[in-house]
Length: 417
Image (cartoon, rainbow, N blue to C red):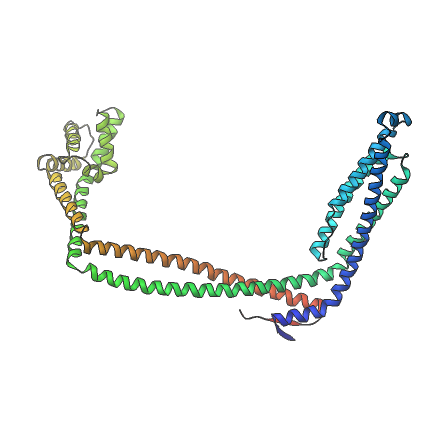
């Protein structure tokens, strides 16, 4: 068993099959030459048909019509038949070189135009006969010859050319392997380049993170961190108070919707907002939260009249929260403190040292996103590499198996994947 690299395998295979494929193609070329000769002869006859028809038509339509019954129709049909033949012949594309694809396509093209010619002949033949019997007979004979030679071509493709097709298949597969090996090498280089870029970006990310830690340990940033924590604490506190009355607010909205309680349209809208987005609704209110207070006072009346349908525990809780909001101004104090801290944070954010931290964070985010994109590209390239390797192995097996069938030589391809 010979184990050969691709170039040597190709040379040995071509040498072993050259004479065989040349012999087969020579036979195919001879069949095509015969077909071309028939087509040329058919074209000459068609030209004669057209010439004869036009010469007759020079006598004039009326004269021809008076000669014999059906003569004018025969003359016109003769020209039409000749034009149809020339049109069909011009549609037949003769291959410049023979291979399985070109010769099969040629046979298909020839057959389609032969069918068209047969239909035209059958349609016009009885009109032309017997006035132009010699021309008609010669053309019919050439069409039959063309049909017979077309059948010869079909038989040649289905029998003799099968060996040549197998040889061409191996040659095509060898070219495919060559192309795949080039693609494999390119993909390996792409993977190496992506891995290098990822490593560089990973180092850059680590350095940036270390730098960020140093920056975040500085005093001004620690103050900002403390301020932001306090802002979050106040937000949570405000939200807890508002969430504690969410159930009574829902019951109030249900009463308004059913018509058992009344509110102005604007008040109903505010009520729905306090249920769905309590914190943002509150901080966008005026500093006294007057709209919320009006809603709570109206609810208090319903609670006292026992129309809100609250359990005793919830009633006490509601009244306690009502007192803290309306009488003790708890929410107002928390709101003032919250907004003061927001102003303080805004001032801190304008400082150069804080801006550097923000910029560094953005830089880290961008580097991380770049690494993620590179990793996605790397995964695609790695999957592509595996797919190429599998295609090469499959194609290699086909080549070795087909080569042994054609040549009888157990040749093996040596490929570095």
